[in-house]
Each structure stands twice: as C-alpha cells, then as structure tokens.
Length: 428
Image (tube, helix red, strand yellow):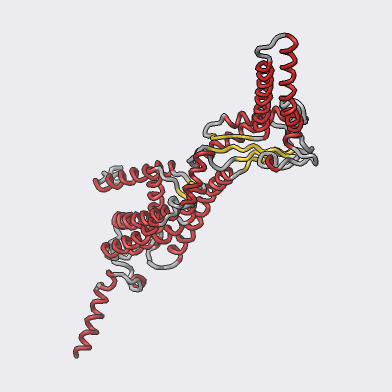
C-alpha cells in the first residue's frame, strides 16, 4: 500500500489548484453568458438614423409585441360578448413590468367614448350658460323668451354637427351601434385609421410596446408575461397569435442557444478528426492536445464575456468555429518544439489583426474582433502552459517532424550536419 501511495509534489498541487480555479472561472462565466439577438446589436451606434430611432423608442417605446385575436364570424371580437374581455386583457397587458404602452381596439374605443362624453357635457354646460346669460336682467316671460331664443340659436349651430357626428346614439361601449359606426364602414370593413388595431372584420390586435433599452433577458421575460396574461384572460377567439419583432428576437435567441452545442460539437469533431487521423506526429496522445487547448481557450473567452456582463451577439456565436480553427495552430507549434518567442509573436500579430475589427461601427463586428483577438492570445498562452505541463520536451519524431517548418527543425543536429556538408563541398 505504501508503494502505491506517493506524496503529491508542490508542482502537482499547484497544477491541481490552477485547474480547479480555471474550471471555476469558466463554469461561473459560462453561467452568466447571454446571447443578444436584438436589432440593436447589428446597427451602427453613431448613425443618425439609429439615433433618431432610439429617440422615437424613448418617446413611444420599442417595437411592439402584437397579440392578434381572430374569430370565425365578422365583427365578433368587438361585439357585446367579447369586447369586455378584450378590454380587460388590454388592461392586464398595460400593467405588466417593462411595458411603455399598450393599446388595442377596446382602450381606443373607450378613449373615444370618454372624449365624446366630455364633449357632450361641455356642450350641455355651454348651452345652459348661454340660456342663463340671455336671461340676466329679465324676469317672467321675458326671461323665458330670451333664454329660448338664445338656446335656439345655439342648437341651430351645434345640433346638425352632433346629429352628423353621432348617428349611432350614446357614445358608450355598451352601445353596439356606436362601436360599429366608429370602427367599421358601411360595407362592414374596418376604417383605414383603425387598421393598426383592427386589421380585418374578423380580427383584433393589441400592441404592447416595451420600454426603451430592454435587453434580451428582459425581452424574454416580457414575452412570457404577455403569453401568461393572454392565457389567464382566456379570450374567446378561434386563433390567438403572439408575434412581433421582440417575439422573433426571443425565438431566434432560443434557437441559437439550442444549436450552439450542436454546431460547436460538430466543429470540434471535425477539427479533432483532422488532428487525430492525419499522422502529423507519431505519438497519438499529442494529436488531440491542440484541440483540447482551443476548447479551453474558447471556454475562457466566453467566460470573460460572462464575467464582464457583455452579451454575445449572434455574429460572435456564429464565428466561434473560426476561433477553434485558428487557436489550434499555436499548441501544434509548441508540440513540435517551435521557439516560444516566435509562436507568441505570431499569435500577437494575429490578435492585433483581429483587434482592428474593434474600429468598426457595427457592435457585433466589434465583439467578434474582441473575441477572436482575446481567444487567439489565450489559446497561445494555454497551449504553451499545457505543453510545458505535459512535459513535451522530448525530441520530435524525425520522419514526421522534419516536414514541419519550425525554427527548432532548422537548428536540429541532423540539419546542421547536412548544412555543414553542403558548405564544405562548396568550399572544396
């Protein structure tokens, strides 16, 4: 038993602590990684059109979430049976967190009815004031005649306007004639000004505008809250659709997060198969070291984004396999005993080239440049430490390594002897 047990060395303990710390850093950072699929991640921040769009979003909210209710019968969503439920749903949606505004046919009709009632009350008060003013200083029949004459003139002026503007009776949501007259034409189709909330005679739409600057996680929560509110209200509709640009962005983000493991795994298998099946070194254990190094580098790069709280745009996620290919170069050179200074210079130059993408006005291009630049440097450093830790210091396999163009290969004893023989022959 004593022969099987060996006391761990300081170097072993240091390596173990380093591995645990790295694993904790990577896992903690990956848990904080967020994928951003909104339109803002693809637009240049300094463009005047973008600034104008942001100013408009600050006043009216972002792109709306659309709840579309469709029925089998014409005008069904705005009849006396369905309109109260629709109005209740619009109220629920307007009170959700992160909602800048919510409006639909119910709230719009309610505002029109209220404003019309205010107008009628104002006209009624004005009519009474005209009568009272005409009767001042008079008594008896003279006062009554003066009041009637003043009211008659008032009615002659405003009466036809009221009859022409309100042929449907009392302005209230409980009056079906009022609702149909305001919303629909004589042919039964929605009036043009109502198309944004009543697209057709068989449908009604509710627009929910998120607050300005809502991030991907907030958009996901809001979309789910809208779906829950619709399910709780239980509107009587043949078909209910929750759509809009925020919903599409959330669905795209979910799709990307589901496909990332598949795409990353496929790229990893492809690169690993190249290193494993092509005999670039005789020792099989060396062949997968570049792939392992690059996977660690990608994990560290994503973890840095997570700890910094910077979301990854769709462009960065789509180009991560590029980092898998580029980052595997440097540990391959280290495994062939290339000089560290040469490899680090090449890695630094490559990182500087990728860093030029930070000058782009497009956010996702800048993030891509940062990810590739940082990932390349991390891959070189991790490859150097990993190759050194695994003690790959033995002489490379000559039949294979002699074909690898590296500074170490040029200065090997065999090449030195060949070069000396050539020089000697030339001198002779």
